[in-house]
Image 1 (cartoon, rainbow, N blue to C red):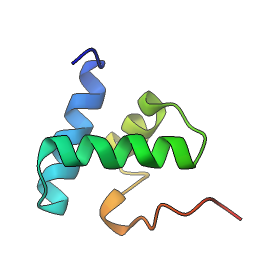
Image 2 (cartoon, helix red, strand yellow):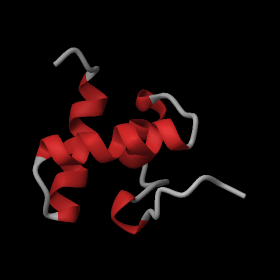
Image 3 (cartoon, rainbow, N blue to C red):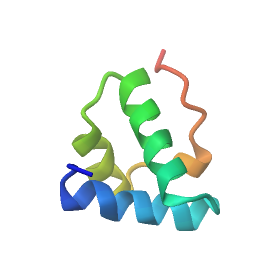
Image 4 (tube, rainbow, N blue to C red):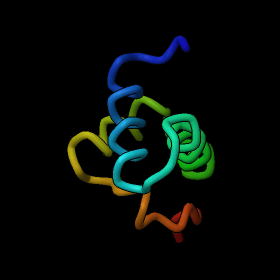
Length: 63
């Protein structure tokens, strides 16, 4: 796919931590980015810097 390497790295980490496929992890990342009005690359950066853990995320908008 045409994603930057950081997105693929983050998806691999989410897949491992959540015990899901990489495709499912990427879908969760994309859903999180959309629902929080963020860029996918920003979500990936937050995952890689351990500021965001999707396995604990409820994917609900802030507020």
